Length: 220
Image (tube, rainbow, N blue to C red; front, side, top):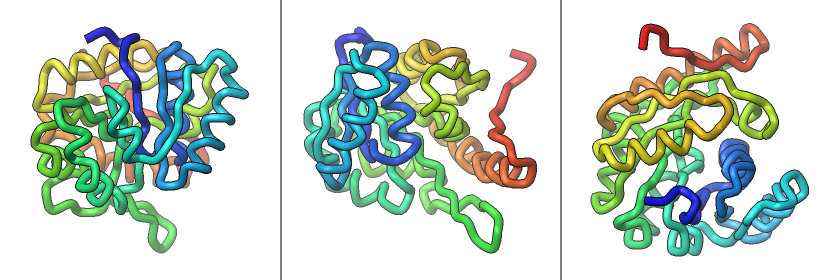
């Protein structure tokens, strides 16, 4: 699969994480499609990205249209919306790669905490809902603000999990093109729960110390 010949659709592309990933992929010269429940919001984000990266190859539309027309999908919706959007578009996502960046997190009484997911993790839930799709878990620990600062080098590791080795390798190669992210093979999809839950700890660290923290795996 040739990286440059694909259309990268961002489901929930109007949120901070989705916009950040869209910016980074556009900076790489890849064709990006911004999806949203609201077409006007998708258009607004596409215009915003085009102002930052005039040469960007951009499309926009409803989440369903983006699922249909894109080759590689990135799911960047809130966890609360994940199940409905995937069930609605399951047929459109068959035989495609879906990169799940969702971290089930809630904020209560001044602190972040991980939300328990019956299926084990958001990524595992996505795979159960999409049995014909190659789900890959990645990006949960990367700050949306860092992603949106498109000229900033992000010195962080990105743990990537999947039950599909070919899809995992493709996503790891994609991540390696973003300066200076380092993809780390996290094994099978069931390991995504640890990555997703760790996001809550990073957010609490960020809140306490007023920083934007990231992770680095030493010893590899």
